[in-house]
Image (cartoon, rainbow, N blue to C red; front, side):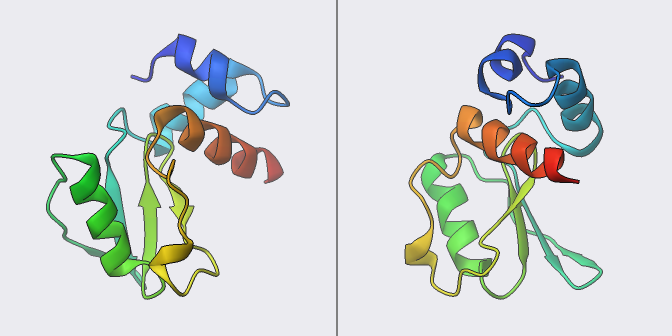
Length: 108
């Protein structure tokens, strides 16, 4: 379960926090370092990162070649990114991922 205060503080203001919480409960993870990699319809098994650096390394290995989802809301990173150097530094910050993930969710 995701921290309600974190959702309240970080979620897209156009969405009710309860909706964002439900979205994260259904599609996300409480682990801010979570990295999921998909190649087509297959999930690529990757080791669970134990640190921010390990998570970033996993992302860099797969971004631009596979669909990579990260953080609490498991939002897709690297859409249109061909070089891992283009990734932002706050990529795994829980508040930043909730902000971006809820904004993307709000568009659909």
